[in-house]
Image 1 (cartoon, rainbow, N blue to C red):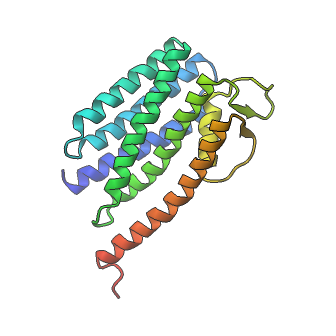
Image 2: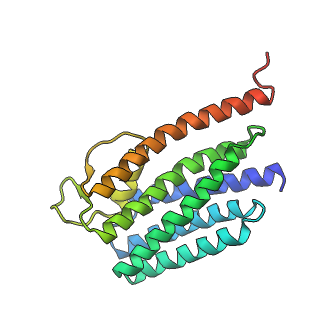
Image 3: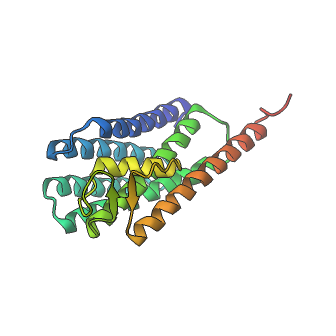
Length: 220
């Protein structure tokens, strides 16, 4: 695949991830809003799987896992039963986690700093937030009340919109404190997400600088 095509696909992935995150701010908190949100999430998942499928030997595993995750998410939205929802969020966490790990390895390989690599770097950062978003939804499904949101009575389920927001502010270490993990597993993984966000920025900057210098960009 030529560089221009790869850059376009990486840009499409980035746009689909940003679209999902922005849409979560404006979609309603009812069943219709959840359907719209899940569909946009499936589009972003499909874009990530398509990008991964261009890597040799990963076409079918990534495609099958992404398709199974999308079906489970749609079924879980249509029939909100706890076992089905737990399966859907577990599959999302696993599938996006595997895709993100492959992206991390790919970005660590030597090569020129192209637009596609920069798009993929930002996309990976956003994917990490969505991986933990899936994990937090799994916690809330298996153990309702794992998170507490200011202004809501204790035990009130935290919405999907609030959990994606919580994941983003945790990854960026903003930590506003308006949503608090109270279950011990939720607390630990929220802390791990914050550590992941800090380390990702440091590692990515170091990799980009190393690639720039190895490509001759550091020469005067």
